[in-house]
Structure formats: structure tokens, C-alpha cells
Image 1 (cartoon, helix red, strand yellow):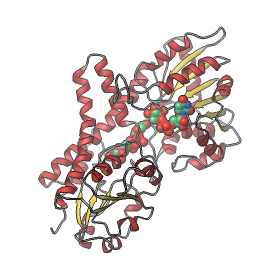
Image 2 (image 1 turned 135 degrees about the vertical axis):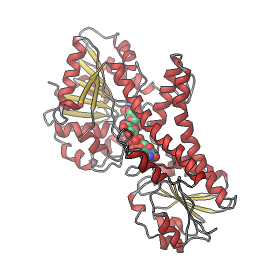
Image 3 (image 1 turned 45 degrees about the horizontal axis):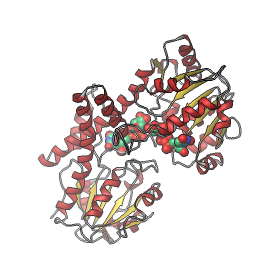
Image 4 (image 1 turned 60 degrees about the vertical axis):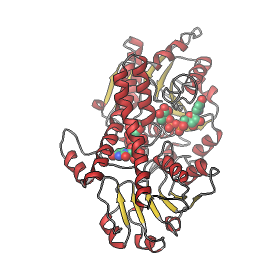
Length: 456
Ligand code: UDX
Ligand code: UDX
């Protein structure tokens, strides 16, 4: 029975996952180590550095009991029986595979650090999303072990989505654990199964070989992103033909074989995973001589790119082919609601394109304003940041809703309209608002995949 768990990487995945493990395994000491001292201090003070509904309560319940955050990665490696690796693995920006392959430098550094500092047999659990066969590479690093050291490597990909991390962790559709088909590998799988089985029904804990587990994570994200690109592709046809994407999505989604989820057309998918994982899959296909498969998945990313460009093109076209000098308020900057995360947010590209058209952009967001400032704060005098959505819209020619925050549904749009320039344009990039109601107020409304509602 494992009594001491270490997680390296206190980010969006490591922090919430360990807090939930600590909650359900009160007899297990859970330590989360990170090289970023500020992050560590925030977690340890009970004020998580990331916004995630319900997270603070779960963290505080175990802090000081069996949950601890620290910057001393090396010391903790020496004490741990099971080590989760949850460091970030972004897309490579340099050298071979730049723009597609995963940047594994943090991951490899972590593997070497485990090798140097482990003092007892350790089960190493890959939590970071990694290219298929990375666990094998990790095992090769561990082949240089000293006498008495023993390592088993498992893959346990995380399927939580941001904004719903705690519910996803508490009641997962499944937990997936990949391990070697050796007695040692199977015993290690058993130890990790025992941890999850404290709160997850056994039939939802799936086991596989390591490569299947690694590939399943990439495949699951590719399928989800593909659905978003598919509905967005249909939304483009809707705008040309007068069909309404909401009716089409309902009609498609009621087919039980298709299902209703992930059929929301919008400004495109963002987040740290979808694009990165698909590009990873594309790179893998190319590497293994499967160019047709690579092109198939690549199209999911290209369509996503196209959807963002299309959104801005429509804005330019209906606003008399010029945005120069016009004030545009962006409602929302996070890549989705209920998170402050701006990684790969569609708002980034949209904002860049609006600036290229010489528009003045005012960004508002309940959680991601700091993130927006980090990206655009010093890039142009034409970007401003405003916590109050009403102020953001003051004097604007257009409002573009980019994040599906529930609170944007209940804003006083008459008040917003009254403070805007005429004609007032509203671009609903998430189909969050009631277009008819807004049109009745006086807005010229353009929602994704829906007929224009305008008097112009
Ligand atoms: C996770 C996964 O690890 C990634 O592969 C997946 O695709 C997305 O989810 P996430 O938790 O979102 O990443 O990343 P991030 O919030 O950036 O957290 C990673 C943490 O690891 C950071 O706090 C960073 O300081 C820490 N880190 C990084 C280390 O402690 N050591 C390192 O060597 C590198
Ligand atoms: C995703 C996966 O869902 C999760 O299982 C995996 O572990 C990490 O990647 P996440 O990126 O946090 O999670 O959010 P998700 O809810 O999947 O949304 C991703 C993007 O797709 C967001 O930008 C969202 O707005 C967009 N999206 C989602 C749509 O545009 N339409 C939809 O119908 C669903």
C-alpha cells in the first residue's frame, strides 16, 4: 500500500489532481513540488494560483493534514514511493519538429532528477500528455539506475477539463492506467488502481499497455477537437445558406449515436491541449510514414484557424470594410468559461487581427484580464483592459463576445447599447445570447452560423 505520493508540477493538472487524491486518501501523504516558488507559496497558503470552481475548498480541506506544496523537488523525490510527473510539455518552438512535436525538455530533466535522487523503489506515473512511446524513453533513462534502485513507469493520462476539474476528478467517466505487461508492471498498476478505487467505481478504472494509454489521450483530445471543427465547418455553410446552426446541432445531437455534447459552434477551440495534442499526433503519423493520416488530423487544426479568421472577416465586411480607428469591446478573453487560462485562446488571434486592422480593442474578462495583459499589455497603445463590461462597451462601435461566461448572458444589453456608437454591432462568437432580443433593442447582430439580424 502506497503511503507517500509526490507530484512534480503544481499546474492546472497537478494541483487539482493531487488535492482530490489527498481528499480521498487521508492516510496517504501527498506532496506537490514545483520549481516555481511563487506558485508553491500560493498553493500552500490555501489560495490556489489558478481559478477553478470548488478547488480552493478541496485544497484547504487537506492542507496541513496530508497535503503539502514545496519547492524542494530533489529532497521530496528521495522520500516518495509514487511520483506523478505533471510538468508542462508545450509544442516545440525550435529545431526539428518545431511547431508540431512536443517539447520534452522539462519532462526529461524531471526523469533525470528522479534517477539521481530516488532512494527507494519508485512507481513513476506520467500525467503530462506525451508523445506515444515516451514512457519507454523514460525507462531507458532509468536503465542507468544505481544498485538498489527500482523504477516502474505507468501512464495515467488526465482527462479533466478546465472549469470543471473538480467534478471531473470526483466523478470521472473513466480512469486510464497503462503499464508494462510484466509482473512488476502489473503490480505497479495494482498500486495505482488501489488509490483511485477509494472513490472511483472499479468498472471505471481501465488498464492497458503503456502505449495504448498514451495514444488514448491524444486520440480522445483529437476526437473532441474534431467535433468542434466539424460543427464549426457546418456553421460556415449555415451563414451562407440561411440555415441556423442551433437547429442543425439539435437535429444532429438527438441521434444517440452522435450525442449532443461538444456540438457548440463558436470562435474555435483553445486551451493548452487540443492543438498541441493533434500536432503531436500529426508528427507521430509523419514519423511513422502515415502522411494520409497526418493530413486528416491536421485539417482539424486548419479548420480551427479558419474559423477565427472567418469571424474577423465577417466583422470587417459588415462594418463597412473598415475597422481602422473603431473601438471594439471584447467580452471575454479566457479560452472557455470558468477559467482564467488564456493559453491558445481564440481571443488572442482575434485581437491580433483586429489590431492589424488598426482597431482600438478594449478587453474585459472576469478572470483572465491579467492573462490578457501579459500577452497584449505592452504590444500596442490601442489595447486597453477593463474589468467592468459596461465600461468596456462605452463608445464602442462593436461588441464581440468571445468567451461563454454565464454572466454575459444576464448583462443589461439595453444599457450597453445606449452607451455605444451607432450603428451598434454585436458579434456573438459563442451563440450565448438571444439574437432576437438584442435585435429588438437595436443591435445589428451576427452570431456564429446563424442568419444576420440587422436593419442595415
Ligand atoms: C498539464 C500537462 O502536464 C500537459 O502535458 C498537458 O498537456 C496540459 O496539462 P498544466 O498542468 O496545464 O500541464 O501545465 P502548467 O499549469 O504549466 O503546470 C506545469 C507546472 O510544472 C508549472 O507550475 C511549472 O513550474 C512546473 N515545472 C515545470 C516544474 O516543476 N519543473 C519543471 O522542470 C518544469
Ligand atoms: C480538454 C479535454 O476536454 C480534456 O478531457 C483534456 O484533459 C484537456 O483538454 P479543456 O481544454 O480544459 O479540456 O476544455 P474543453 O471543455 O474540452 O474545451 C476546449 C475548447 O473547445 C474550448 O476553447 C471550448 O470553448 C471549445 N469548445 C468545446 C467549443 O468551441 N465547442 C464545444 O462544443 C465544446
